[in-house]
Length: 621
Image: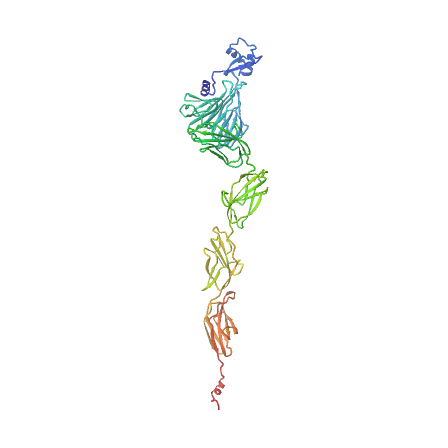
């Protein structure tokens, strides 16, 4: 066996070892009939007769062993068939370009198959052997031949980079089997389960045998690996001595049913292992690989969701030299459906102003209801509000202000909860309230405004106009404080204010409040009686004035009233008596100033000149 494996490993693809294939005769067999069925040239049957020292072609006794040189056997093409593809896998014919590889394609020889990261391909050879090409690997198919109807199939492969796993069928003759060439060594095998890992960057080949035997040859040295053994071969060096592979990982209780993501498995730590490889396949033979990970901790997780169904987990340890150990296989069921609904509202970061939040989501297949969870904490550790819903796609909740997180899960027909969807957040935050009415004060022709601060307002917006609706404000400005002063001409105005958030969102306006800005009170009032009139003048800057003359200090008995635009007016002189005079400035919109200081004026009754002598006569005459 060692010589045969070495021969297969070292000879070129065009040659085979000088060995015979043994044929066991059936009743009625003749050498010429055997030649027609098995030889490249049926007329070479005399060579078989001579090789076996049979005197002449005649009916051979049943159960006679006939030795046929392999070189005389008929050789037919033995195409392989692609049985599984996952991820990005491409194929390049010998005379073509790379294109996607599809299940069912035939590999006839000369093709190069390239797998991308997280991608797999499985190819079944003519003898039933299965080649599992691992991620990021480059594999070229050489000669694929079958020796007529002998059952012997010869397969030549070239693993340029990456990993290969195989379950090779046992051969019944000397010319069958599989030969895998790599840049650093050649592996010859027959009837075995093995793994090869060609590290192109480090120029290192690692080989592991699970069943049967493999001969690894380089630098004129062959190392034969038995079941449970491996070897490391570096470029320019012969293979290292065979060593035992690490045992299967120890497990306590792997889950047999998984109903939530991530898909997670854990096992016991082995101090001799520097890493572990975990794989998931759709079949127990692992010819349909779907997921794989290499981890330096005894835990494997996958976030990607596979279809519900039966799957198989495979675990193995990796030693300090990169040799992968014996497998630990575990069947499990994936039961994730119904999947969580796809949320559509509220969108992430959306804001609700009144706390009346509307939720909306999709209707996944197989979902019979939903579970909604709300919490002010992203991990849903406390203060969780949970709502069980039927087969609906909308729901409304009244929530207090704050940041809220929500997630949903589907329920099956028994009301059992399945996988939680990814949490999303939204905010309940009312806009700043309308500021309460504040202070309006006028002083020295300026208007002083103040209002109460409101929660959530980083700034305030002030509007001042002529009408209560403030449709065309005369003043509109942003303020950082809750008080300000403005300059206005005397008149009637209205003002309102609202809070602004840091991002510019505006709250409600306060009610419009009036501003009454009177003109400055007239001053320096002077009066002079000039014949039948009283001449009044004063100082002031108003557009108009009203002059009042009253017979009492309270101005309840006004005897004369006049309006003027100039700071001077003449009034008719009243009858004799004591009078009070004052002036009121009139601004825009008939806004009145405080009265000027009151001026007292005495009007005397004059005696006609012709009566003067009468008043000068002595009394008693």
